Every structure is written in C-alpha cells, then in structure tokens.
Image (cartoon, rainbow, N blue to C red; front, side):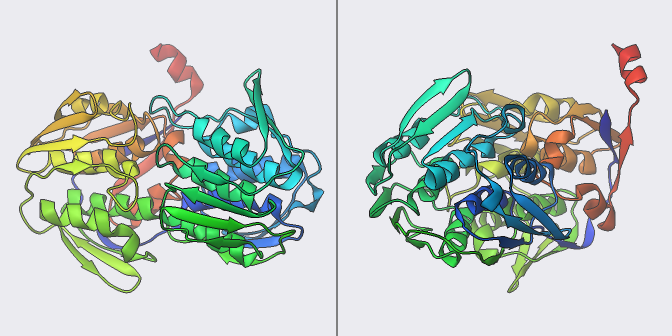
Length: 427
C-alpha cells in the first residue's frame, strides 16, 4: 500500500505548470472511436483515469502510439466489436462515454455500468433519455448496459437536470446521426466546449457548446485531426487553494483565467490576493481570511469538484461559513477525516457549517474520493506535525505528479510504500 507522508507548516512558493484537463481527456479519448482515421491528442494528463481509458481502447482493438509523455496517436480503425471489457470499465465513471461513442459509430454498444467516486446516487437515466430519443433501445443485463439501434436520427433532447455526462453522450451519439439534434438544458463546462472543438476539428457540425442549447447536425464520417486538450480547471483551482491555505505565493501557469472566475471570486471574498495574467494566475496569502458562504452549482457556478478543497480554506478563516453542495447528495464523507486533523464542521443534509479559524494537527487520514484526497493533502500541508494519507490511488486518478509539483513549491511531501506484511500486523 502507498501513502503520502506530509510534514506540514511550509509555505508554498514558486511556480507550477497545470496539466491537461482530466474531464476533457476522458471524453475526447473515447470520441476518437467515431473517427475513420488516426487522431493525435496532445496535452493528455498522465493520470490513472486516462491510463484506464487508453487501456480500454487498446483492449478493444485501437492502435495506440505513444509520441511523448503527453501525446498519443490513436487509430480506432481496429475496433470491430462495440463492447467494453467489464472489469476495466468498472474502475471509473467516465467509462460511460463509451456508450455514446460506440452507439454513434456502430449503432450498438455493451458497456458495464460505470464506477468512479461515490457521492451517492449517480443515475444514467438522462443518458438513456438521449439515446432513446435518437432511436436506440436499451436494457441492462448483469450490470451491462446494452444499446442498439437500426439507425440514429436527430431529435430534440431536453434534460430534466443539468448533467455533464449526459450532455457529452448526447453529443457523441448524435454527430453521425441523420439530421439535426437539439440538446436543451445542456451543461456548459469548459470540457464540453473542448469536446465540441475536437469533434468539429474532425468534421462534425456542433454549435452552441458552452451555452444551454447545443445543436448537432449529423455528418456521414469524421476524419483525423490533431487536438490539444485545455488546461485542467480543477487542478489549477486546487493549487490556488493550496497556495492560499499555506499563506504562500504561487504563480500557476498554463491556465485559462476565464475558466477559474468562480474560484477566483470566492478566494478573493475570503481575503486571498489573486492576480490574473494572460495564461497564468498568481495567488498570495498575505491578508486575514474571513468567513464566506459557498454553494456549488453547474458551470459557471462554483465547481462541485472544488468543494472539499475550499472547505479546508474555510476552516482557516475567521467566523462561521456555510458550504452548500448543490450537485451531489453525498459529498461530505471527507468531513470526518478533516475532523481528525482539528476541523470543526457539522453537516446537515447538503450544508456544512464550518467554524474557524482552526489549527490543524497532523494525523492519519484517508482519501475517500479524488477531490476529498486533494483536500487531505492541502490540510496536511497546513497542519502541525505529520499527516499520513491512505488510499492515495484516488488522488492519482486526477492529479499528475502532485507529489513532485508540491515538492518544487517547497512542500515536505513524499510517497511511502507500506509492505503488506506490516498492514497485516496492524489488522
């Protein structure tokens, strides 16, 4: 078993480069299935979720050529069977994007119900709604979603709730459908725009991505292209909060400041100094921090994927803050871990009441999910003494080289390997 061991109390100072967006990569890579030629994808983050997607593509018959650490050429022409291996798909939520891509290409797909972080009920009813509207039938057999259609025809799809995953799947299954598809109440996240840009570069006709109405006019085929994935909004936000929490001074490079506006606004309301440049943001923690209220919402609101991280910062601010989760039902599982470090947080349904300022002290904790793990790292950077974080596989699903990047900023963090024999003794 691997752990992070953090000796807290060090300010983060220096520069950090942000990797490609995880949420864009895990949609764009399955989208290559729709193409009739090889595609080159640049700025791919080197994280385990992306590795899982690449492994699935490879297992299905795609030819993967590694150009460098962050660039792959994917030739999907070897994919002949629209079926995703069961155990591989169960590792992650984004495996659901294979449904839309395979259905769009082959008019059928067999994809296991997806895994991923546990935030409560994450239904795929809106995904199935768009597939059905375009002419597909569906059934679930032993945990596998089976989709089939004699042909796909453009349709009007209105989502009952704003959903990133279903918006992406609607785009994927409609780009090769006959006629026009109109997707209303669509999600507007940056990675949806990035996916649309990739599809259009292959010859698709997708308009309106980034608004709540997306129109897709089907084409007969897609050609190869070269695409550079956008910077990761959530990784950038995580380093912004880490810099603020440690009272540091960090220049975060390779970002799109527009994508970070909701995060920047909340940090500034807490008292953090944030300076924007063309493709960078500087975060300085040089003022007293005060309470504020945060509610997560679909883009352009405050991202749910930044909720655990901002909770750590609110623990360090003077007064009582309210943190409301507006997207998921069960995203406060990490609170018990923060309490181990000294946080004073009470949870009532979707609202966390945070009392500050509190002083963190190092303790053994675990990453309950990807973003909760990032919050544990930030808390460990601030805490007195040593913090050991277990289950770091969650963190490595979405953060490239987090240990090395933090070390370059002055953090005392290292990965340790605990032999299985010692784990057995402890049990």
